[in-house]
Image 1 (tube, rainbow, N blue to C red):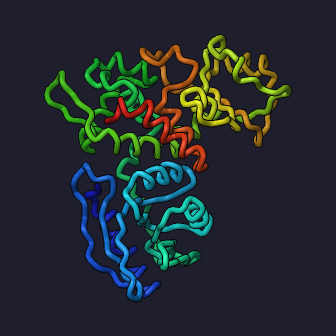
Image 2: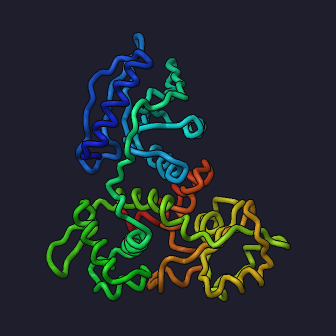
Image 3: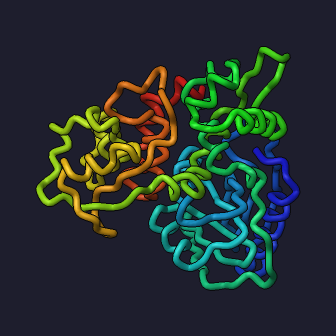
Length: 342
């Protein structure tokens, strides 16, 4: 569901470009305003005598950071699904085609593979400058840490700010401004001074995962490494380093589905040097071991597990935009996250 002028303009401009570039006929367009809908609009397209009906998801901006989450969202939309966006460069266009995601943009680039229709047009430049509009642009790392804490433990939303702040590792004032912002953006219902409720949590999770990849993950990376000896993750006890598994190893432990190729460890700066020494890690920008800074404090529910919270595992997997990780992320969602969101 969408309700912004910018998204409407993107859809209108993308449909016009599709009609002008591909000579396709645009039929009825229905805008979906019901928050229960998993997509923003549906449209009828006709090429020659072939009628196609698509469910459309609108994204203002697509980049490498949010590609995995967008791919996952597209898989949740009833088929056939079509992605509309401002602009897709050739590299991202090829990635979308590899992921079998139909798309079109305001420049006239498009990929549609719905037999007998096949459309593949890339390399067209947008003919005017545009600002990448982000209605959640004020959600910097600190606010994202608070939203993460609230998504993981929805009971926190009614707690005193002094309880929320240390769990999210943020200042009291940031908690106050984040809750106000969530209320203004329609994610938080404030009934009275002591009663608040998160609403539209699935949409909030999707938005958090996208912004986490763009704004929070880059700040958490402590470095990439390789091990002098083979890393035996099955026998490694990270608790002694105040650390937890994230990413693919965590997903394997939660689901038993994925064989890890990348090893993500969340730890604190106070123990990272000991971790590096004990595991005999060597700096390597291309290494398959990444150390990341924990951005949460004492976790009252999930803190003693050997993996980070499933919501963060889900975000880690989607940030890779790898098909096998996207599929595993869906399993993590179904088995663990639904209870927090639905």
